[in-house]
Length: 466
Image (cartoon, rainbow, N blue to C red; front, side, top):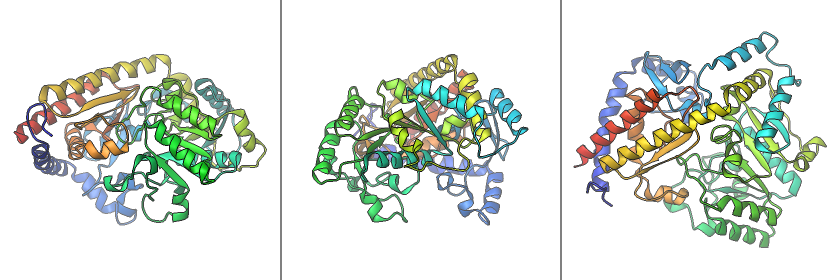
């Protein structure tokens, strides 16, 4: 494959390796305080970080504070934040409405393990936005998907679940299956392999989770029919309506409607995991954006405005199994008063119609600007966005599922882009997906900073590869 400028894929990879070495040296030279903090942290905290997704060699960037659309690291460097806590901070940092709500609430007591009025207001607003009448709370996306799957199993009396190959739904065993895996291990569309994501997951659990490709309803139908024939009818299909951990992969026209029909026909509970899309791509998340209503929705990340949060929405019929206590849905911190106060302020005062219009305008401008830069420099790739979310796909072909992602993406370029951004005042989520999240406090100046960084990367890469 050659680019529009005639540069080969191999030449781009070689150039990326050279530039990565240069940019890594630059980053290390300007983050000595992070280096010192990491040396201290590894003595008491495994790998020096609270989560393995925060690991970065030779050390991560440690932050001190954030305000609006900006964050600062321990070396005093300011960044435009497009990471936004893996998409949790669509409200931006220290939003005055959320600061006020949490400040007022904490003075009245931070935890009771008893309900408060804010939890009622939040559930009323979520029911209005998502069109699902019954809600329960948890404290993370992992808890939300875990409880949703248990409820689906309780309703159906079935054990097997279906997920999309390559999607991440949290860190409990049943969904730590077929996430990141080498291309050769994926398997054919009609019989993709169930593969544990790391050690410690029993094979018996892995075997209960069956992966299928995204954007391929016929393949899902064939797998469902095969499972039914084996007397293993699925309890649920859990999926993101738009894949959010391969950058962004949008559903093709008619795909979600077809999935809705397949699951309804076979008595399978359809769960939309909206941990990343919920409240971020529209007021009613992907459910509103794409016009297909599932049986259940899981939320987290952006719901709490920066506090640990999660929620499960469902039909009244499904939630009856929880109401009658046949399925136990519990948690000491569920509906924590601080989280509910932040969520109420976020839903009613921050994530308004005007806020979503602002996110759409900035997202459209960022997408158009990225595509113009790629075209002008002749780099392979395209940009995709939906609401506050988006990414540049460095690829010579359309990404429509995990298989095409692994087959076509130039994996070296997102890693290089992260370094370019970090060294030019743009903080992105680490990893090959290179996904951004805008906040309601981002401005055109933040978009310009991102575009300037991409422009420099494209210029340097093409020049080095020529």
